[in-house]
Length: 292
Ligand SMILES: Cc1cc2nc3c(=O)[nH]c(=O)nc-3n(C[C@H](O)[C@H](O)[C@H](O)COP(=O)(O)OP(=O)(O)OC[C@H]3O[C@@H](n4cnc5c(N)ncnc54)[C@H](O)[C@@H]3O)c2cc1C
Image 1 (cartoon, rainbow, N blue to C red):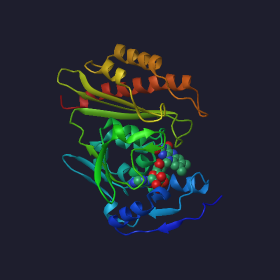
Image 2: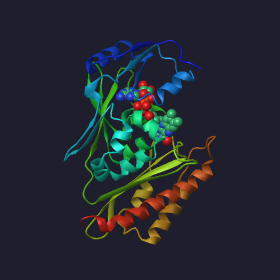
Image 3: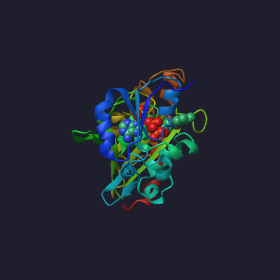
Image 4: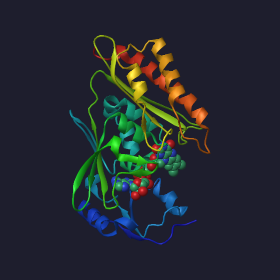
């Protein structure tokens, strides 16, 4: 199938994008990498009357890494960040997550912000942004606002963005020197959307205990899901074998994941416990590489 008719806009300036969104917001879609939007148009799952292609707006491109953190523009491609050695060093959890998003060809075009705006509950990047306490920088013609990642994702494929708003960039605070983080997921085939995923972070202290643990899952609920009980269970421990076995059991018993055509809730429960135990075991292995 081919998309239904739409008016194509190719603004060169951010102000023009915001003007177009203000005028046509309810009937318009922003086109970034097109890796989710084009299939949805071609299958006629959506039929916007206006398409606003932001690819010529140079100020929306690129990313910047500073002492305070990482700012990722709306047009920064997933592959661009994945291939950056300094991003890999500063945010290993983001790097690992990116290598799990689809295939190289898709990451060459797909943007980080496009994935966040799309808000697929099975996607890797929303869960990673919640784990890293990222903040979304949003603009409309009338106003600017910032939205913490934890409030940004409101339902499957639904975000807190209003129809006249553009996600201009996402900002990640710097990870501390003793903070470690990993991402793992279960897929049927490499490159498929994952059945479940988990970003696992924590900070090693000089007492050999881990604190500020963040465990955020994708694919188990309509939004990225923080497992706060599991976070409390492991925080303040040395992530011994006993703790790892205990947290796996806690997750497997307490999680109530969604069930769909891809797999059963029972399977999701089981493998979520496994990837969280594995992720925490990797944090334990990384203790010696921190500066404590
Ligand atoms: C075969 C295949 C496999 C895939 N597998 C995975 C996977 O395993 N994991 C995964 O996470 N993703 C996967 N994807 C999706 C891919 O990561 C997309 O690139 C991503 O979801 C959207 O980014 P994009 O830049 O292409 O956005 P687009 O497709 O251009 O846009 C997606 C949606 O976001 C909106 N949008 C985009 N940018 C903005 C913005 N700055 N402000 C406001 N709204 C905006 C658009 O209007 C649209 O509604 C897959 C895609 C394909 C085709």
